[in-house]
Structures are given as C-alpha cells and as structure tokens.
Image (cartoon, rainbow, N blue to C red; front, side):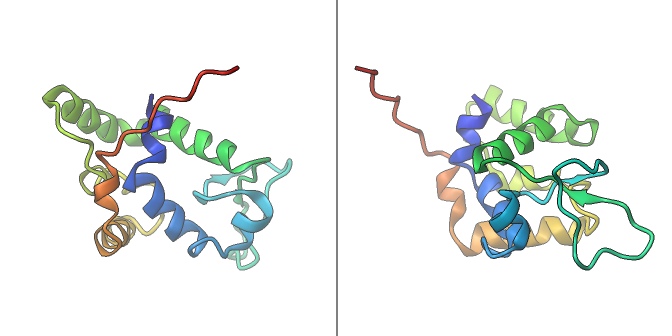
Length: 146
C-alpha cells in the first residue's frame, strides 16, 4: 500500500528531485539512485566524487528505479529515525484525511545532514511545483491479465 501511495506522493517526488538535481546527477543516471541513500558497504555502490577526506560513505546504487523507490519506502517504514513520520501518517489515515507530504516532510530531519534546511527545501519544491495536489490522487486498479 505505501509503495503505491509513494508513487503519487509529493513526498516521493520532491526528495527525488532534490537528491538527483532534477534527474541530472551521476547517481541517478548511472546508479538509479533517486533518493541519495547513504551506505557504508563497498559492493555495487557509488563513491561521491566530492566526498570529504576521511569520510567512508557511499551512495546506494540500484538495478532499477523501482528498486530505489522500494528502498526509500522500506527506510521510511522501518528506520527508528522516522517513527514520527509513521505516527503522523497513521494519524492522518485514522482521521480520514489525505496524506500531506508537506506535513510529513517535517519528519525527515534526519534524512539529510542538512536537517531543517533539507525539510525547508523539500517543502519549497512541493509548494513551488504544486505537488501537494498529488497527495490525494488515486491510482486506477491494474487491468486484469489476459
């Protein structure tokens, strides 16, 4: 359910735009990495070209864009840093209100080392591109297989 909601969500589109430089980054083009997820493994991941001396992080690379989306959804749905995100999302659902990406973005403080500045950027992208209108969108069911 969350992956389906993520596809229509401002909270997927705005971070993807920010993290990839609107799709132009090397991570997006070569590694299908649209959410800039860090990792400390060495297998199949990409080293930032301008990584500070002494830093060891890499950016997760993926075989496909959908794998990147799945990883982002898994992170938001399981990591301790996003408990507030999950609680707020549950409250919105319990109240029957559409998920609000701008409100939920407030729980992404730990997603970036930029903290509050990152959240502000995500909210500017959402509002400046009218992405909030997608938060209440619904996907049509898939047609039956023949």
